[in-house]
Length: 248
Image 1 (tube, rainbow, N blue to C red):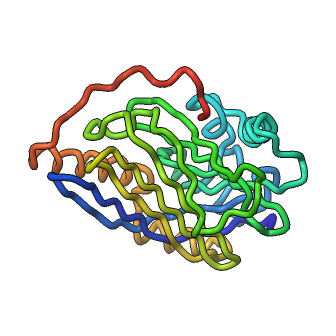
Image 2 (tube, helix red, strand yellow; image 1 turned 90 degrees about the vertical axis):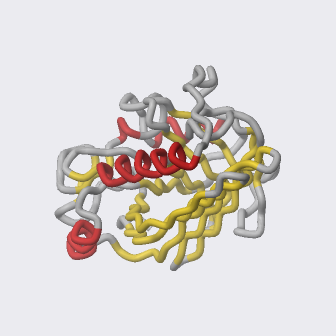
C-alpha cells in the first residue's frame, strides 16, 4: 500500500468509576506510507495544503519530529529487523492546524501487523510513546492484549498510575483499536474504529463538510468533556513532569 487511505471512523471514550462519563464522536484518520509522497491534490506530505501530514509532527519531540526515521530507530532498538513495512495512522492537519491525541506507527510484515508505536500527546505540549508487540514479533490480532504501565499524564482527571491494555485489529478493509486504562476501579476505555477506503479529493471534502473544524474541533471537544467532568465533581490534578524516556 503506497496510496494513502481514509478512515472515516468513530472514537468512543468511557470513563470508569463513581463519576461516569462517555461520548462518541466521528473522526477522520489517514493511513499512509510515510516514505511515499503520493496522494490526491488536496493532501500533501511535508508542505502546506488543505490537508497534510508533516514529519515534524511525528516521531520525537513535539514539532521537532523526525518522522519515519525515528520510528525505525525505536523498532530497531526493540529488536525488529528491517524486514517490515511501516505505516502511519494519524489525523491530518487542516489548513496547517493540527492536534493528535494519539497516532499510531504500524509495522507490517506480509500484510500482518507485528508492532505498534502509540504516539500520545496531551494538551500541555507533552508527548510519550508506548511500544506494543509480542515477545517474538508474532502477528498481532484484536484478540491479543498488550499491556504497558501508564507513565504519561494525559487527562488531568486521571492519575498517572495503573496499566494500559492495547488491542489492535487491522484487516484489509477495517481498523479497530481499543485502549483500556485500569487503575483499580477507575480508568478509561477508548476505542477507534472505521473502514479503510482510498483517500480522495471527494472523501476529503466530504469529511470537511461533516467536521469542518478538523483539529480545532478536537481541542474544543476535549475541553468540553473536561468542563462536563468538573461539573460532575471529578478531581482535577495538576500536570506532573513528563517521563524522561520518550518511549516505554
